[in-house]
Image (cartoon, rainbow, N blue to C red):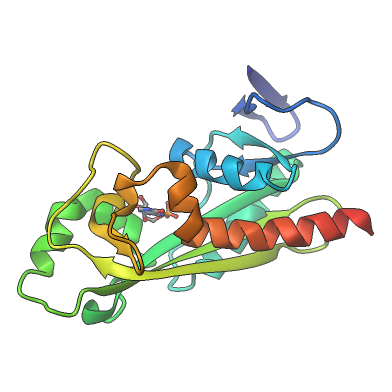
Amino acid sequence: MDSKLENSHHNINVNIVIAMGFPLKGKVIFFATGNVNKFMEAKAVLSDYGIAVGMLRLKTLEIQSEDLEEIAKISVVETFRRLGLPVIVEDAGLFVEALNGFPGPYSSYVYKTIGNAGLLKLMENIANRKAIFYSVVAYLSEELDSPVCFKGEVKGEITTISKGACMGFGFDPIFKPEDSEKTFAEMSIQEKNQYSHRAKALRKFAEWYKSFQKQ
Ligand code: IMP
């Protein structure tokens, strides 16, 4: 279902895409993101916990900071202030050991500018391919005074060539988690969710959310 949400008080107009496949009864939370792949991953994780999630397709505020948690927190506070809906914002980054953690919090800019080909070029002749993806999920609703945050990580390596470019998004074709022969881009959403930083952070959130709802 596609519908428009008007909030005349704050003069905003946001496209809400409600994920199909759950009854619109009870509580729904929203994932504010412009990235439908991230939303599909989140929907798969949260549905295992019976948590209904809708996508708020909007560009969230992203402050410049070296701390993913600070970026996600400020973003979720601002999004909640605008919409007044129970909302998740997620921020991720790829940290490459041989590059002293680069691109880290600047991952999105690096992806947009030099892309996967540029990162592979930067790493030409570098034997240490170790890298970590971090994800921070921040959640805020009217029941809370301040946002809650959950972190997930996955260790892996940067491949030497891009693989599986037609699936996934971002750095997926050049990131292979430990204990896997496949890059993220060669995996289905379910397979990626067995390893991914985002799925781990979302599972922590889901555990917290379920016990919070029981209180
Ligand atoms: P964001 O700011 O959280 O959207 O992510 C920073 C950058 O990392 C973006 O360019 C994303 O495409 C990329 N990224 C985030 N998560 C993933 C992932 O799960 N796989 C591949 N790339 C990702």
